[in-house]
Length: 434
Ligand code: 4AD
Ligand code: MG
Image (cartoon, rainbow, N blue to C red; front, side, top):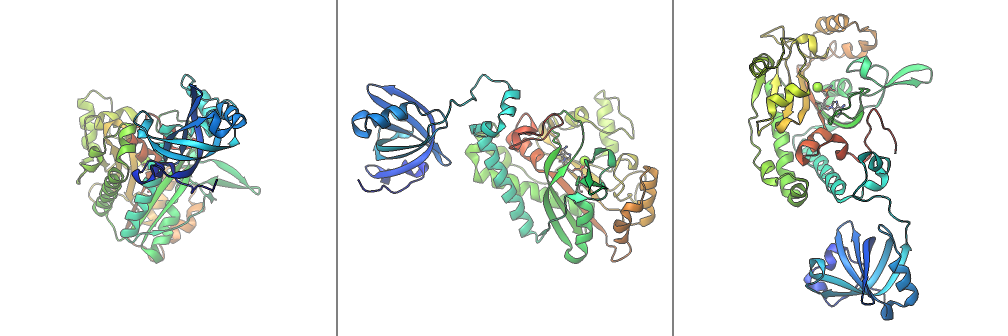
């Protein structure tokens, strides 16, 4: 018989395919036998279809072998597309030739296992429909972010991951041995992006960031994808408007691009499509009052943890900007607020529904005196930051930027219980394999 044309499984179900002889290839989802016929469900990246195979058509040897192909075994099938209301999706492929590429061993993952076991078998668990849907949305999310940034004329940069000085605080940096000298895995690309704004004015990077925090929470990874944007000639209002527009673009894009995937994961796409500016802006000082009224023991200078962030956002349907934190609880590079010097020109974007911080944003301090003052106050030797201080000596410019945790955003969008469900091979304090 002549070779049949190779067709994606999603296309095998199209009306014009009925009666045609085609070839499909993919992975077996299960086989049952009834009345001398095998019913095998096969999946490729586009969809799934039921194959029917008769002993007298495909031959004894192949029939017996197909019956023993395991779940996730790999096959290539030639056959004719038949409309049959009893088949899932209303189509089946009546096989006339089957090639078994890999019969497979019994697939070790099934419903009743513990989460720990699934994490040990993560290299196989990533085939589950839930993880497949989530990672497709992640690819679409990255695409939408780049599309927005490109449209806004923000240029993609490639800052280093291996660095000589920790940027977000020494205690939470992974230290490495760099040929006998101290080195660190990057926690943020910000300082490099600040150098790059002078020739390019508007830059961004999407890189892995590393945090050596022993945080066992549903929103901390030790390695995550970090989108960072740095904009020259921008103040806090300009920055927050930019973030708003970016988030709205991404949410609207996903609602259009993959409404089914979102719905399957528990996020009605209409909710994303309804996202509108402006997001409420709440000063830290006012948030403290709101929290105290709700019975939280917080004072000026308290860092707001998971419980406090939850309390501020649980009943809101829009994300909120929390702004103007006390200087003493913030990073050294944040600009002291001219209107209230106890605070900095900074904001965190908190997701609704208690999902927590998505973005950390600030205007950058342009005064060398204030920068060195803060580092000294924090007990950090300014010497390794000399190159960064140089930026304030040559072409100093008012500027601002932010960092967004890609997995944090995806977790909120797809309503995942744990951030590890938004990344194929999660890195947490207790796990860096497989
Ligand atoms: O708030 P962070 O620490 O800010 C910075 O690193 C700035 N230097 C970024 C910048 O302005 N260029 O981190 C930014 C974001 C957080 O809002 C959060 O979404 C995410 O990074 N993030 C994490 N995501 C997953 N796991 C962790 N352990 C994270 N730590 C921060
Ligand atoms: Mg932060």
